Length: 457
Image 1 (cartoon, rainbow, N blue to C red):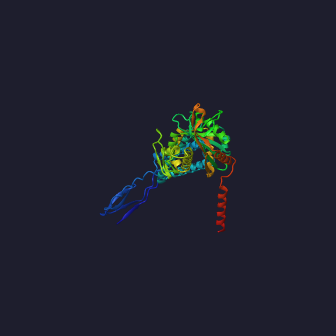
Image 2 (cartoon, rainbow, N blue to C red; image 1 turned 135 degrees about the horizontal axis):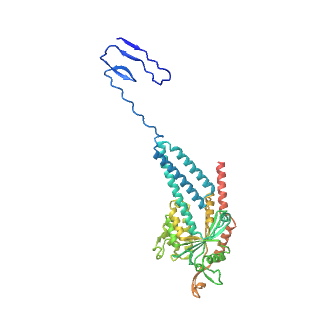
């Protein structure tokens, strides 16, 4: 087999003509080969070999597998997350209920979460998960905005006191004060004058974290403020809530600073919003029904779980007890204690909206929103435990006594027991003066002894 080689023709430099490979010529026929042209040259290959398949086109490169639509959607989610996070922070700040360092920590956490979501968006799988996380976080921020706005709306509706600068509102966190808690059987506006069936003074010392609840029976025969006559305490409400405050202040020798007023319908709604309360009854009894509020209700001696209507029946009943109004006052404070326990539980968060709705429609106070916010901030700052003490004054019944509001008619009243009134005065002054609760020193000493014993062991 003879092969002739022809040298490649040289082209002048810069002519732009591509260089041709050496051409191989075969002088004789080969039955097992066939000519094929490649780049303008003739080559021989085996006759049985198929032509090579053209190379498959390469797939166009994508940015991590993320389409333009997906990237746009991801950026939209990031924007929504940032906007709602900022809105939630602003709303929470407007409530003035969170300490500043709470807001700073929350802001830092939200920024870190946003940066984390932003960084993970370029990974296809992680991006999908983080976009879902971002959506959930944004939904949470939206809920936070709604909750904060509901809180602001409720505060605006129930607070009747004039707003003062924050530094003045902070006085409720550093100085003792007295609040009159009034419960009225009133289906109209709470600002209307009405008899008060619940009359409790809450004496609060924010420094010692001590509260005294002093109950005064509705039929207590007292000097009516603004007159030279006596009347039932409940009738003072007919001349305005301020008259009731002055009347109680005169009885106990103190100044009553603020008031909180709630009607019975609101009481039912608030207890229901707390999913009921657990109250210990000293007796087994059946309450008399009250048209429009509740039917006759049975209670057993011991613990009872009460919904709103049952709690109101328990707090209002007096005819089932030999001591009448005195036992009713005791039961009222038991219900208040049970409500405070529920408010300190997670129930407050899970039923936040229902509770706000109940408060906004059936509750008014002379406290300003700044004062309420200052008290909430104080509690959130230290989570201190409060010592709550109950006290109820007593007296003797009289059915033939002149009352100022009855225009010469003689009505049933309760003549005050001076010893119980003096005991209540002593408790009030103890709280206002900053004294520790009875037994607090003993408890502290016992705790110190126990700690010392543990260290010795």
